[in-house]
Amino acid sequence: MHLIPRPLLVLEHDEQASQGDRQLFWIRSGVLARHFKFGRLEFRCVLDGSQALAAIHDFHPRIPWLLYRATQARVHHFIMHVFDRHLRRLEVEEIDP
Image 1 (tube, helix red, strand yellow):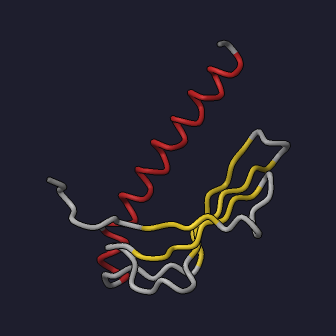
Image 2: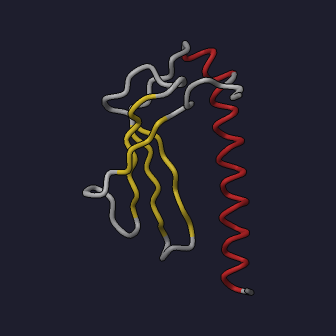
Image 3: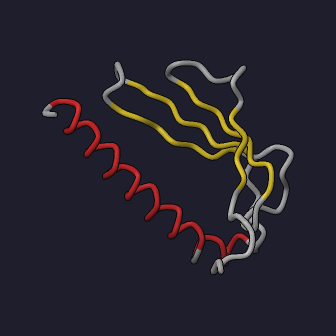
């Protein structure tokens, strides 16, 4: 049994638009998104790979913006913070296996 019956977001990796330092994912469906045609999630390595940027473009949340900012945006911020910690752990493991 799942707490959420459908995926929050379904992402499709765009292999043609992605490169070594840039990975692009199209938002194809999910509970959180209203429109699925244009939204995309992008990760880029910058500063010779020492930093990573994550950006979401043309995303339209299913809920109104004010409610989104008070709820989903805070969850997104938390998730990106956890992702940052995960990447830092991976970096430490690579330096000192």
